[in-house]
Image 1: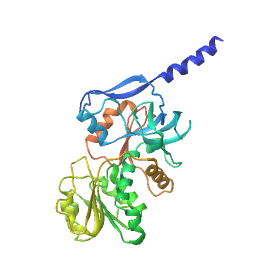
Image 2: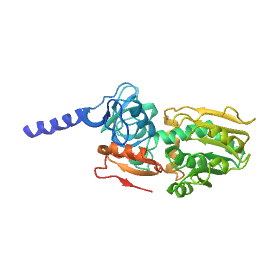
Image 3: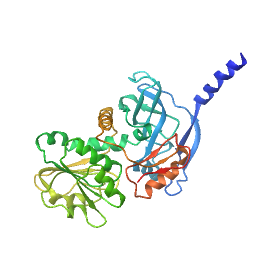
Image 4: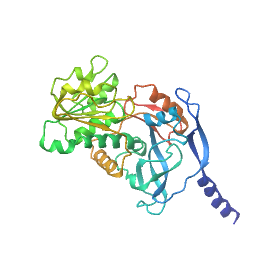
Amino acid sequence: MHTFLVAMFVPQVSAATMTAVTSSGRCSAPSWSCIKEKTVTVPKAGRGLAVLEVLGSSVNPVDCDFVEAGYKSGTLGLDGSGKVVSVGSGCDLKVGDEVFGAFTGAYAQYATATCSGLAKKGKSFSHAEAGTLPIVAGTATQCLQSLDLPNLAKTNHNLTVVVTSGQGGTGHMGIQLAKAMGANRVITACSGSGIALCRELGADVVVDYHTQELFSALPDDSVDLIFDNYGTPGTADKAMHAIRSGGTFLVLEGGEGGKISTHPKQGVKQIAFGFQSSGRQELTYVAGLIDAGKVRPHIFASYGLHEVKEAWATLRGHGVLGKISIDPSNTTSFSLTV
């Protein structure tokens, strides 16, 4: 009887609290002094929510931006992948489902998420990989669909698409997704080791931005669609000469402060795309493409939950190809893939 009571007691204690990486105040690289590892209460599943065991997450520029600006306090981490451990009323998932999507507080052992925004994880990729996907894959999908790429590709079999920065998170997804949606030719800009990666991922033309500016390398009226995922000021004006009449320029707002052109070419449409949370539809689509072998996530470096500061410092140090993973199963030092 005594042994039975002890066996019942231990899981209750372990389920009541968890390790989480939190922020308070405002801080920046390289020390990230406001980021601390704490023991906190395990969240509960409210209406329409699920509690998940976190098995993968990642680092996005927006994670760092919020802390640097003092906008974020509490448990960090927006991307997540894991296993459902409890559900609230109105949730269409069940305990044991393996899913990925937008988590609330993904840098922890457990996190909550809105059930309707979660997608089933595919069979061919790991939780560590799935945890790198929600923001970048969802955003790239939304942007390329806003450019009407899938529909245009049905009638234009020579469609040319530019992804302005190919070696980062949205870029390495954008190249692959553009091809999967039917682009005949994808052009991008990269540097260093990113050149080989972008070619490997399907880019037909790669411009080394250290030696030549992307749009100075492109002839007049040579491209149909531009996904400006980097968004530096002035890019839209530089790009106009290269866009054919009837084409579209889309800039992903935020980040570097890029805007649409104030003097667009006649016949060219412009879209200023604001960040939107990825939904189940986009993520299910991406998972299907990965399982079909048409898209793959690229993990540049993997850090454990206790190494979030180091992971963020790596991101802010530049030179990242693809994504940085936060892998709770990684209890040693980070691994690096070029």
